[in-house]
Length: 430
Image 1 (cartoon, rainbow, N blue to C red):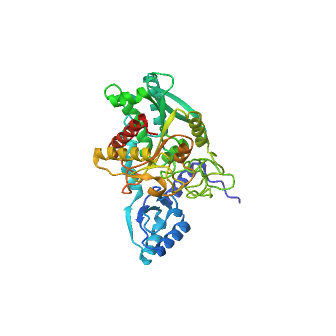
Image 2 (image 1 turned 60 degrees about the vertical axis):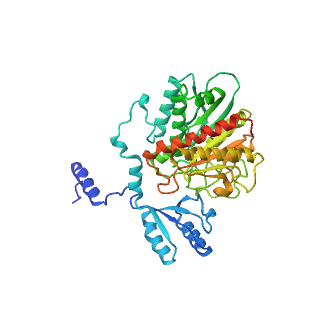
Image 3 (image 1 turned 120 degrees about the vertical axis):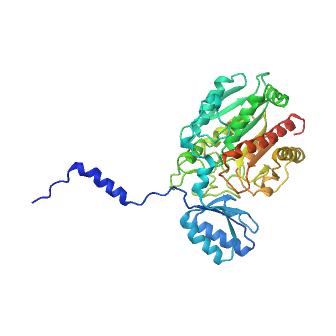
């Protein structure tokens, strides 16, 4: 006698039974750790490099095992399973480490608070002391374009790999047809959320203090500022929706499963040389060819077109508390070193005057590490005399998870540095 089919009414109940039997899914980063380790010998250096390459860990600093040497400060994110095997191994090898973040999931929740319980205010009351999603930032840009048409002009320089517009805000009084300009971009690396927060803060300060601050009035009267709040729009969106620690763009590679290119290794200046990787799965992957990423190509095209007008290029990253200038790709002194060095020195002092926070400054190659294909080097090589990259707060205690409570002090002090560089630019020293 054939078995009678199971009554349909029982199916949902059985599915519920099955779901109840499955273990609850742990939050994505629960139990993950961030550790700091500083190799004290060549032996320790080789052990760490081998272990990190084998385990495919997420290096927070430096960006690649290529840069690890004796004395290098290494911050590395370890999934729960990896830390269970790696930490005893380091202890056995007599390699000292410090735990910076013991539970990454809790640190992520602490960074933004409970967003679900936090109602977003209407745009006239836009909160500059919280992190915003890409959709919120774009809505804010539209709003400013509509309400501050005397000082703001919003436009797109192109489209991202996933088809999102690459928006830029042009700030400045339209007092005369030709004015020198400053380019500012944020969010080349998706997970560095404090960077887009600064770009938004800069625009807010410019608009709110234009009438009351003579320095700001002078800046917006004599110069244009091209501000790109989120360079890597696809990656930034992905860091909100899928992987908080995503760094690269989101382009697809035909031969590998890995997504994305490091948008700060994709520029046509010593492309894919030292400090960049040819492997598509690496965080510092330089791409299949220079300007392969539509985001990089679009911005490079805009900068090339306006290079006679643009006199300063400022790019914002995190974290390390540094103000860097060319070169990144080699140990050499730039021709206008004295002007740029003077601007950096004064900017760092201005920044420190706010809260006593110290920034190191100098050529990127010797101050941070050697890297090729960077936007800053490209800008300098293409005739922009002042090219700087900021590495904002902090130095590793929070890393990429700088809490919202530190947005205001970080942006306030950085604003002083940017204004200082701007006034240096208005002098004749190039």
